[in-house]
Length: 231
Image (tube, rainbow, N blue to C red; front, top):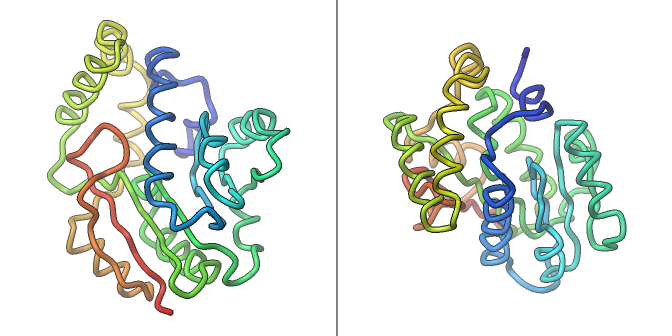
């Protein structure tokens, strides 16, 4: 595998079973809904993945763009929501062509760890352009420099125990250990940012940022940030 997009576009074992897949995306949808500024909001979920419950988000806002770089995943998402008039599935290049100041909220969950710093800085400029004055960017699931793979595994086990797939999660962790994921992670790395570093990066990108009290998803050792485009 040459990059992370290729990995996420492949048949991987990150989700240990259908229950894990469902509760993960149901939780992410709830996290996005919690941050919607109004029922009239127009929203971009950048790096949406399978977005299994995006229809729940669309029901609470005026329009939802789902951006996914992995082409096979993007095609599945487009087929899944083909009959949802509020949802439009797009690729990263289409985000760059969105009109200026057309969005109220941009969400990037579990995305920045797969980007080089220059790529993130370019995206910050794009997100700032497409947000309305006073619009909000939320970057979630940011990995700190001292957070370990063991801590992530423990968080998954706790999440699995609370949601009825503990045995599958234990087998899944073993399967992942012997999969191509560790080798790819070693070869490509994951971007890590301390709280101060991410806040500084967001300020330099033209936003007024703060760390949120709660991260998206089950791993609360990772961080989420809110960044407002000045009015």
